[in-house]
Length: 334
Image: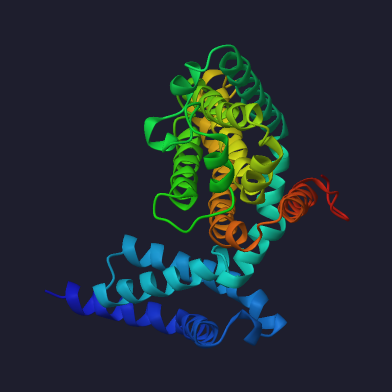
């Protein structure tokens, strides 16, 4: 019968001995949550980890000795609040986004330079192979280009209709529909090349080859009509960013697939997890590149109709991306 009063007495004494630390920690957490960590003095910042460990120790004792439930709940909540301050990210969303675009994304892309080079080679080889085959037999065009993407732009089309489509988007069946389809198609290829990379690289390689062959088929058609220069300007004004995004997505997929096939000394799961963190950072930026490519496709192509101006925009975007990803950072390893 005397156990309950004795337990309450123990709980009271336990609280009295440590309550000053809990109260101080709670006050500091209130201050941080109401304002920010910058509102704390240096002394307060140094005190929080010690107060957190003291509170955590008190919580452990309270649980083991079965002190009253209210005290345990209070300590659990206070410990959780302090934990997120001590170990959690204290930067704002704007600071995290700034760090991602300033450091995380370009560093991840530089890490994948081998896979990026491999993706470029696969795309170029497929484009050249498709162009050579079509130059020998026009029937290959239907093999490399999906039916929905053709829309009258095939070897049977007249040269004049192909030329007009490069500069006039007025009608519903014009190049604007084709451009939208092409962008959607490329975005799907980019996401699939990354998502399927875990299957030992094979699907990613096939998608890169397929995309390169499709590009080569269209280039072959327009070059055969003397419109290669004009098509290049139309494609590259948004294609530099779009194709670069696909290449990086393919590189991310290759990194994951290689880690799955050849994990090295680490376990396969650990190897994939490590590769996934790098590849995930790259893909976060690829989504942004696809968005920018969509803006260039939607506005730049209609507003800029001069071939040389289109090439100038394409060259500028290419130089900007290369400098952003690969230019040496002062004070940082590239």
